[in-house]
Amino acid sequence: MKRWRTAAVAGESMRPALRPGDWLLVRAGADPGEGDIVVARHPGRPEQLIVKRAVRRTPGGWWLESDNQGAPGRQDSWDFDAVPDELIVGRVVARYWPPSRWSVFARRAA
Image (cartoon, rainbow, N blue to C red; front, side, top):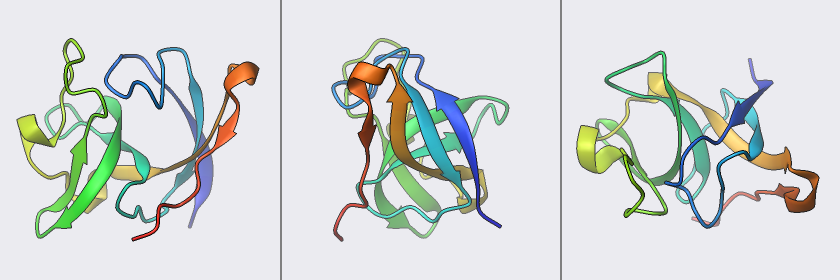
């Protein structure tokens, strides 16, 4: 069952697409595609949510990367390998806060 949830961006790792303080609308349970922004559980700390770009599907799950590889403290699949499907929370569909940066994130073409 797909449902909606929200997530906040806390770090610099997804700049320029996302900034700290952005609030996102997430389609929980939605299958990501290559290029989509997703929310996932950190493989080493499942209580922590991360926002990353789905780069490619691998036998072990989704390879997730930060848009800003130089961000302080950034962690992604380069650090923890592919993220298993069960740790993918959902696909980001929109940024709703702040209002001046409101935008919809369309599915990327494969």
